[in-house]
Image (cartoon, rainbow, N blue to C red; front, side, top):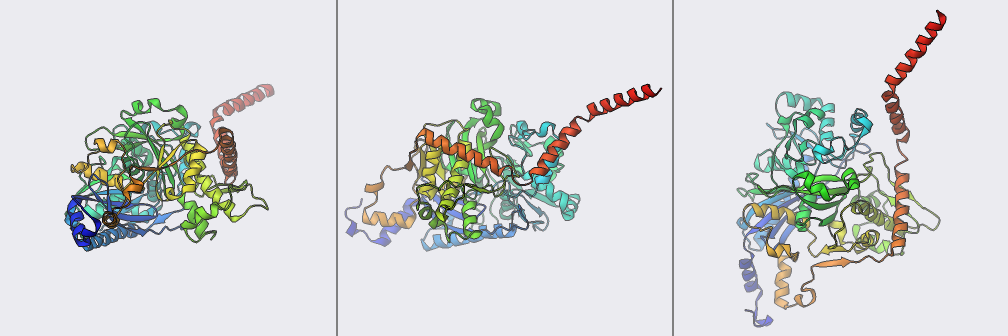
Length: 588
């Protein structure tokens, strides 16, 4: 027991803290913008240390988004190496890491040679919409061009967003991939499958990632023969599907050699776990490159989980696998995805050069209390939920002589919040509030905007590393190091994000607990009255309407006209034949 601060020496305290850590869990967090490797204390969720590397995106043509698969893998090995070096400096043995969890950007597609291990094409990122022509062609052959034609089996609408279309494009456009299939050498998968193959030699994926491909039956949790035939994709090239919390193989090289990967889960699903949204109705919003809202709707069967969901939400939002712990039933979730969130800020920085870094955003936006009548619909890659319009375009409306840089910056933040609210409004309202995480959630103004526009209280946990924490939790669950159902977790007492060095400093000074004890969240309460809120939402919807009627509208209208014309051909043929018969009879 500590008697006085002056009696404690730093080396002795460090030694004691090291003894207190216990088993550790590593988490690979491979996102669209960066890769991180983090180390957590099992069960408590204390973040010990981490390292992060940015990932480049390549834009070969308008609407195309790619990444180098080798760069993705190298970023993983580099972040692991740096973190192990940090642990060694802290005199923490890497062998204290008992297992590793992996979370990743979903829907992105990678193809590689199973003999050489070499990628055969760049990773096609989830944002990419080069498959819009394929999507349109398929819709032309579906009655009523129904986006939900495959939804009963997959939970997903027909959209450029999902992996099957990317894979179909690769097969249609790259002869060497077709040749590789003929020679039985092609393997495909989402980013998790690629990393698992490189780290463990196993060709696997988990149910959350598989549920985003348009190839998995959402009820059986297996690849579906009918779906694979529909997309003309051979099942033999697909990875084995496992539960999120399961054994995926041992790491075969590097500083973590021999340590098992026991958890794999898509990034947004990992955030649902990390935010401890284990009860029906609980929802979280993750702000990253895009914005993703997921609400827990309970365990299967699917029709039972959907029984409390509105018809509008069923039609316009995604039904997906939230997570699956071992042999327990899969937990399902309702999800709405927004393509552009943090990417809009990157666009302001890199394309318009209005800002130099992300830290400037809030200060600039706060230079005025409003956006000066400006509305920005950041549909830079089309619109996802609830509109599913790949042909929508980014639209700035309401520009006047009064407009300034601060108005556009503020309108960008509001555009992100409005998009989130479009989805949130369709979900079951939860009196416990909505949890937020991800890089942009550190922006107080954005959180307040979401509270004002949605009319909900917004909860931002002290630990905003929910995605990586979720990966650590599912990995730790499999080896018995993390009790997901523990009383402490269900009480929603948030683990601390305080690093090890900060923890030592706090103990030495005996400060910090007096000011923050018991404070689990930053809470943002709605400030707008209902009339003002609805006026803003209605104006936003008008702006969205304008964004959807700009590019390629003539082509789309022509498609609809042709579709209607083709659908009436039998009747027209009958009319023409009758008319011809009448003429022939008259002549005779």
